[in-house]
Amino acid sequence: MTSQYIIDHLDKPHTWYVVLTGPHGELTIKQKLEQQGLITYVPLNSVRRHWAGRIKEIHIPAVARCVFVYATNNDIQKVQREYTVLPFQTIKALYQKQ
Image (cartoon, rainbow, N blue to C red; front, side, top):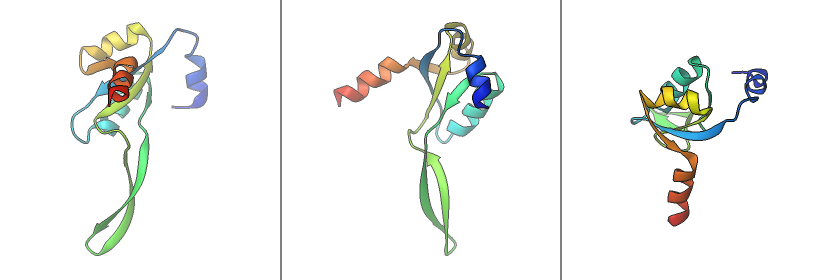
């Protein structure tokens, strides 16, 4: 998704939502939502892992089981048919209580 695509689609009122995924499903769901024309974000962390005596740097999601989606109300209603969606304010309130 290019920055020009995002700029072209910001004329409608958008809101941040959180789409909950299964274990290790963040990048797959992100790709599916982008194919539907939605603006998504999955923050990644670089981590070094050891396999068979080798060290490799991989990128893993910083927030497990969550894909952030910037969408209109109409777009998010379509997504809710397939995935569990929470408003961003709900997640923010949960973290503030901890």
